Image 1 (cartoon, rainbow, N blue to C red):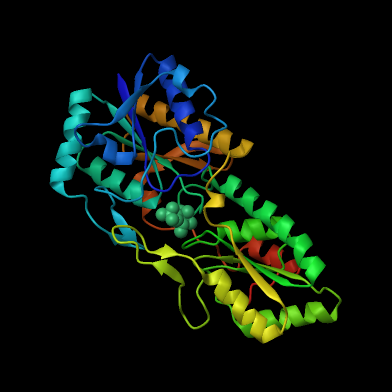
Image 2: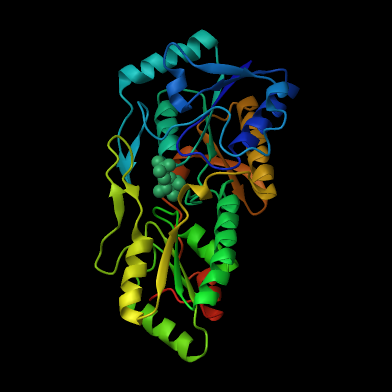
Length: 357
Ligand code: F6P
């Protein structure tokens, strides 16, 4: 039996842990593992792949990125925006299918986010033996409570806030940290709470500068002269704008710049010295945390189990401390967003964090 694996979409810490899990579990069953390079692109003839043995995975658990490479563009991009689904053209699917047949692959593990799993779902509906593994640092896939990579991203945010805290205090400044999170504010919320942010701005909670300014002024009057603000890249400005870098032809619109915009407005409305810092891809790079290494490895092992049981069209899922699986279509149907009245948001408010609402 041969099992294929590919990483598709943006990279994130823990992808190599999944490969480690797949290769380890498949080897125990005597199966061969074919790793396709650069996502689905590696399946287009002449295919670009690597036979993966346990020897190839020595030491990769602690490595960020992916030894297979990945892309969030190319011939297989099924999603170009929130809810915008584009079918992968039939001639492209047919070419990749040739590779499946020539290599005699009995199961294909697709490690990807919403877009890549939408491609996976299309292929499954066309008869491919697809198994999905959820991947996104944004942690916004429904049908799984956690995705690997998220914890690593949050720890990078916390580290950045710890550093910004000391310089903000020294200068009595407002520091604005822009973090990733296109549609969901999980990274901003978790990172903000754990890193001691005073203001957290999310895509899910509309904010006003009046509210934030009076909060900062009140802090000043209480003797707290510095303020840490975390803003998710996908948060909406009060006037309704989502701040973008460019429209990224062939891919999803590139978000970015809201941190500078929020800092400029707060400087005006509070009269305080304000600086902005954008964390960007630092959140995606570097070594995975131990949680992400273990979660990634478990996801890989579960993917092989699903292949063994021929449970195709399913996605590995983490719920209530257990790794299990759900139909892929359940996972790509809707995003998992921060609920503004959830216990976590209310707990953050209870300890004095302002959401600008
Ligand atoms: O979806 C994951 C993500 O990291 C988003 O948070 C971010 O907007 C996007 O990918 C960045 O993509 P790229 O690597 O193409 O700039």
